[in-house]
Length: 338
Image (tube, rainbow, N blue to C red; front, top):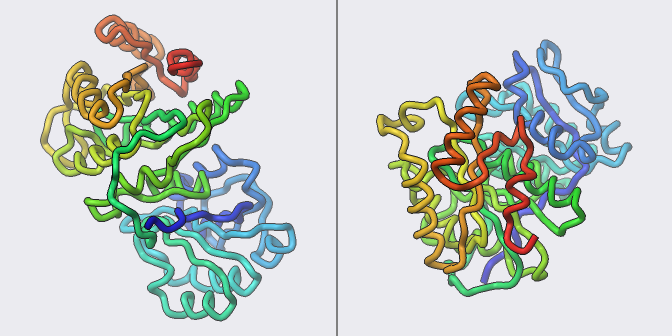
C-alpha cells in the first residue's frame, strides 16, 4: 500500500539566511517566480546579500499573517544547514510554523530542531529525502492525461518547461497540475517526491502515486529527471517514463554543451533521443507521442537561437521553442485532444 505523497502547506515564509549572493537564494527565487501567491515574506540574517523583494518578517509576524510553513530557500555547496540558521528555525517552530528544506542535511537529524518540532506538534519536511513507502509500479492504464518532460542531459530545463506548460494550460482554463519529482519542484508545487532518492525498484510506483488516475480531461505535467543517455542517471529516467505512462513527451535540450554533465560522454543526437524515449514510453503507453523540443538558448544570441531552432524543427518535424523567449504555446497546441 502506498502512503500519502508528501504535502507542504502554503503560504510560505522564505528563509534565505545570510547567503552571499542572489544565486545562493535560487530555491527561494524559483518558488517566488512560479508561486508568488504563496510567498508572504522573507526572513534574512545580518550580512545577507540576497533580496527577494518581499516584506521582511520574523517567524512570529509571519504566523500572525497566516503563513503555515517556513521554507529554507537557500542553496549552498554540499547542501549544508548552517549552524547559525538553527535559531531562526527554532523560532519558526515556536511560532507554530512547519519547516521545509531541500538541503542534503536533514532537519530531522538535528536534535534541537527534531525535539522542538516533536514538542510543538509541527512538521519537518526534508524534501530531498522521501519518507513515504511506495508500491512497485504496475503499468496498469489509468484515466486522465499526462505529459512528461525528458532530456538529452541533466539540467536542461525540464522543470522550467513543465511549469511553463502547466501555467499555459491553466490560463486556457484547462485542468492541469505540475507534478514535482525533485526538491525545488516539490517546494514550488507544495507536494511531490524526489525520485532520485527513491529505492530503484519503487521509482515507477512513486510516479504512479504522484500522478494517479484523474478526470479524462485533466493533464498531469510531470517534471522529468536525468536522461536515458546519462551513464549515472538513466535508471531514474527509465522509472519516471514507465511510471508516468505519458500521452505526450517534450524533449528538453541545452545546445552548447560538448559533453554530458559530470561525465566525459558526448551528448546524443536529438533524433536518437526522440527515438529511444518513445520506444521506452510505449512500453506502458503504446500511444505515447513526442510533441515538441524545448531548447534552452540562453547562451546564444537571439539570432543564433532562432537559426538553431529552425534547423531542429526541420530535422525533427516538431515545434522547437525556447520557452523563456518564445513561450510554450506551440507545445500546448500539439498536446493530444487540445
